[in-house]
Image (tube, rainbow, N blue to C red; front, top):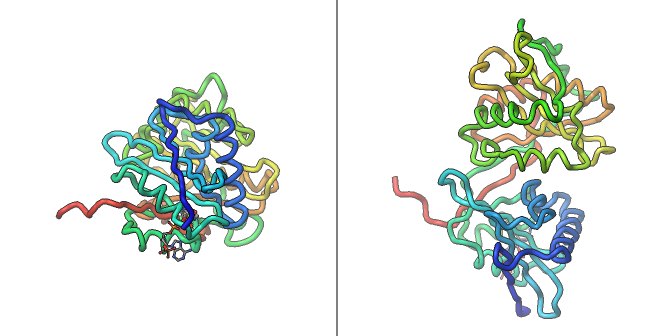
Length: 308
Ligand SMILES: CC(C)(COP(=O)(O)OP(=O)(O)OC[C@H]1O[C@@H](n2cnc3c(N)ncnc32)[C@H](O)[C@@H]1OP(=O)(O)O)[C@@H](O)C(=O)NCCC(=O)NCCS
């Protein structure tokens, strides 16, 4: 095994612009070879922003000084365990870099793997990681496949697009309420929203808000669609939520359909979405609208299972 050097970058040492660039290039190359990007959006954004608040970076270097792997850990919100993602350059795998990065992560963090057949399952089994959560990637065609029902909103509701300078705070409030029990999504702050609004893919036209006709500044439900790359063929159901006060009236289904119509009007071919495997209500809605499972993204824990 070649000697490896794992270098931490945190609030004390900071990630330099050059290091951030190298990590993003390495991630892009690994994604091309594996067919699935190794870092999810939040982790990639934190590399881009060279974030250090609640974020730690680990850089793995081979003996010749080449960057061969990267890991990031993020502290969890509200007592949730922290989460981590790690990957190794495809040309440097099976030389211990993944193990070295894993050993340098805090023991309690949970690790995400994105996509099947990339060594993660075997690595997890070899290193005593046990699967604790899964996100399903679902997809459907926008040009074929089962028809979806017409986008009919219950009486008293209307749809409009998100407006910068008007809707930020109301959206953060409804997102927090709708995702109160969700470990990541529910804790988004203004900076998380601003970071997404600054991305090249951000398009307020595709950020649909369902509002009461009598109070159009209040948000009852929303369907934020994402097209990344903006000239690509695939659209994503990026974040979809219904305010708890307005749940049970069919707004989730109506908002899903409104977003699908929007993506189809844009000329896209396919729609994708991620949903927690144990979110039975959301899974039922999406499956009934023609979505089918494509891939599972798994989260692994290192610690022993809780007693009881
Ligand atoms: C998973 C990953 C990080 C492993 O990195 P790595 O540097 O190859 O890992 P190591 O060399 O430390 O492997 C440790 C052990 O895991 C097992 N293992 C790792 N990859 C394996 C594979 N593709 N097939 C079978 N066993 C594998 C082996 O037992 C290995 O020990 P060995 O090489 O002595 O037999 C790497 O394949 C990767 O970057 N995959 C894509 C990103 C990803 O899935 N990340 C999620 C990790 S949970």
